Amino acid sequence: MSKFLKVVGIGCGGCLVLIVACILIAYVMLPDTTHVERQRVIDAPIEVVFPLVDTVQTWEKWDPWNQLDPNMDHVYEGPPAGVGAISRWSSEDWQVGVGWTEITESVTGQLIVFDLHMTEEEMYGVGTFTFTPVDDGVQVKWAYDADLTNFSSKMFGPFMDQMLGAQFDIGLKNLEQLAETRAAEMSGDAMPVEELKEAVEQAVDAIESATGDGE
Picture (spheres, rainbow, N blue to C red):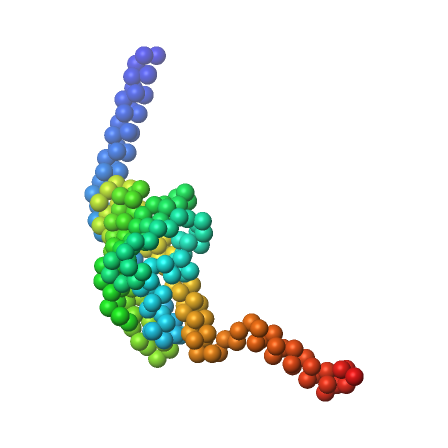
C-alpha cells in the first residue's frame, strides 16, 4: 500500500511540475503589449464632438463603464478640459474597479491623448482619440496601448481586443448619439418640449376645425 501511495505521490508531483512548466512557457510566449482600436463616423460638427471627449466630466454621459456602474464615485482635478484634466473613479463592480485618467495632449479638433491607470490591477496604458473630418461628419478613432508587465494582465492580453473592443464600440455609439442630439439642438432642429406641445395642440385644433369636430 505504501508503495502505491508513493507512486501516486510521484505521479501527482510530476503532473504539478508539468502544469507549472506549461503555465510558465505560455507566460513567456504571450505578448508583452496590447493594442485595441475601434472607430465610428459621427454625423455632427467637430466643434460639437471634440469637447465631449476633451472635457473629462462629460465622459459620464457616454463612457461605457458608467453604464456598468452608474453609481460609481467620481473626483475631478485640474482644469475641466485639455491637458492636465484628471478624472478619478472608484467602483465596487469588478468590471469597473478603481483608477484614474489624465489628459496629457490635446490638439483642438484633431487629437486627445490620456494616461490610464488601473490601480487594483497595477496596469498602465495610453488612450488616444483621433478626429478626422469625413463627408458624413467626423471619424472618431479610439485606441488603447498598454504594457502587460504583471502576470494577470499578461494572461488576459490575448482577450483584451475582444473585451475592451466591445466596450469601445458601446462608448463610441453613446458618443455618437450624444453629439448628434446636441448638434440638432444647436442648429434648432430639435424643438423644445413646450414648443412641441404647443405645436401638437395647434395641429389637433386645426384637424378638429377642418372636420367639424370642434363645433
